[in-house]
Image 1 (cartoon, rainbow, N blue to C red):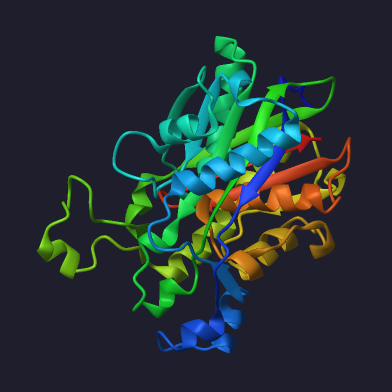
Image 2: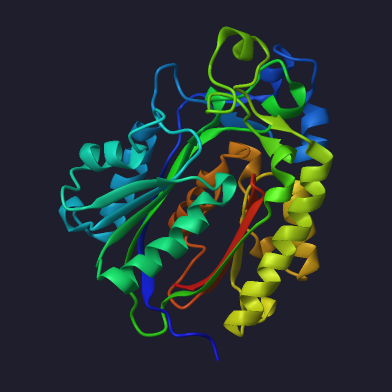
Length: 329
């Protein structure tokens, strides 16, 4: 029997920049081609913020849309968790800036750093805090401005990433509807497969470190791909098994939108046809912690998720980190 949920998603929202950066645009910037990018990633375009746009602006837009969809006011929110690695500044937490922007005066607000797994980490933490501390309404946001840390001369990484934010409002579960189960994992033995080594206490932002591009994304692509397929498959298997649900019961799978080949590999592992897998990586690229909540909001608004549907979510990111969830809507 599936577990009885305590918390459910009341509303969703997302925000992406207006500017579209296509593969054709990238052909003019680095030694690449639309064919090369499509064959390896499935990405056609991505959204990039205008110069000077902070993450808090996108996160607040996504949060406001989620509040509207939920029929909840900002004053009712008790908790705000923002999963991000590209906050407005080192401190304070960007969640506090979002709190002020949306007028959530009663909320506790903090950031969470788990890279691409940030949203699902936040979902589990918010649910636990609501159960333990009596918070009644929570905002969980995943948002990134990855263009702020991309090396636009590195063709292996600059083609992958985009900017955006997605959010959900959580409240008390109703009957069998809600977050049935979540699973989290990490392995610090693979830190240097995907990392940004600069701008922290290890490599402060000196002119020398900036010249070495230490403030940009560094990735061992082939190794990350291999670990991603394995970790996401194992995470999905774990959450389904512990929830007492089979893959055939899922009406929709929403995987992290990093690479179409990874998504196809995970779907194949569970014999889930791509018609039941939500895919928007072709339009947004990898938006890290924002990818799942953006996809979730799009799926909702497209009518792909109906009351009673079981939806699986799974992700993988730097750390290495991974996470999965099963939710009944």
